[in-house]
Image (tube, rainbow, N blue to C red; front, top):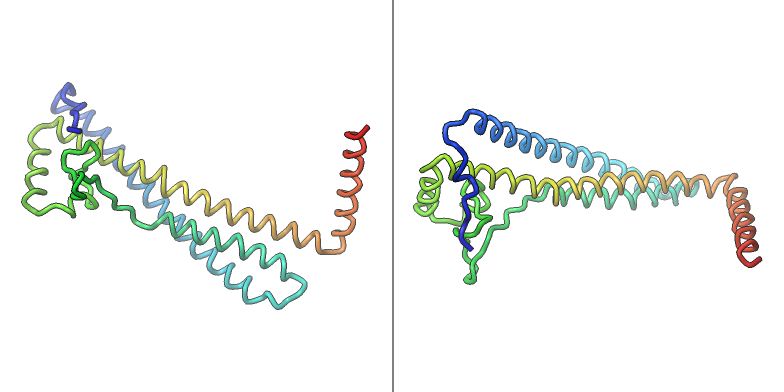
Length: 203
């Protein structure tokens, strides 16, 4: 499928167009840096908490809460690592080579042009620079590619990482409360409530 130039009707030499592309691209870069920073923070925190939890499993009083928290930290660590693993897929043709005519081929993205010989890369780059609309098209494609990776990969895994850590922490507190002196009271109360509900349903 050949590329379609959606920017052929955009007037050239418009400062507003240049500004919005620059701002949009800058925002994407900042979001990318923020995602990496948050993932690195979670990797550090989850690693430390996981290590401390595993090291104190011999304490019978907090064994099960710590094991529960360690379980959540493990998945938080795993998802945070997935969030920062580089994704450099590229469009391929039927022979398995990079498809330069694909609509998603981006001559500005290293994951794509790294698979081209330097002469072909320069040829594509020169063609991109020929007109303003082709530059707009390349910039929009680059912004779209970055946004897709951010939304469907980095921030998705980052959300799962923070949720795993939070659920692990909450579950650890619940386990600690249930195994403490109030555990029997809570379980008895829950059992009585369940019996009442079942009785009402049967009635």
